[in-house]
Length: 159
Image (cartoon, rainbow, N blue to C red; front, side, top):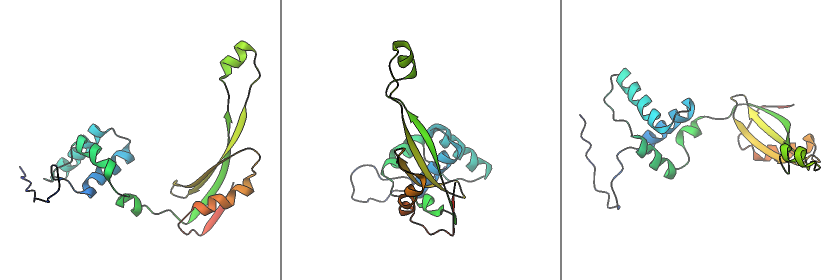
């Protein structure tokens, strides 16, 4: 059994038992495997048992509480966007009222369309997005998408 010695920091409240990196690792595993907090804790405990390690794992409530105040994730910064950017658009139908109401009461549909423009890299990460009205053409949405991309890329493909 590990005994964790906590140094007095002068700050109010109970000292933090786990580093930001430990909490962030738990959150990263949670995101990758789509796990609830309790299952994330159990999964990480299983991993430490398989590795025959004696490190302590943050409990689900520590993960939950600390995830709110974490700075920009170190692990997320490690996942760099790639060298390829693919841009495409899709149409989204938006209704003023639901279809059932329109059919039952014989009212005219107040349908409208929106276009969702996405820029995606080869690692399937969305690097930019733009929601426009139908009047905006695909080529005219590209400058706004490119302005959102902060990392350099080598190739650009439009769909």
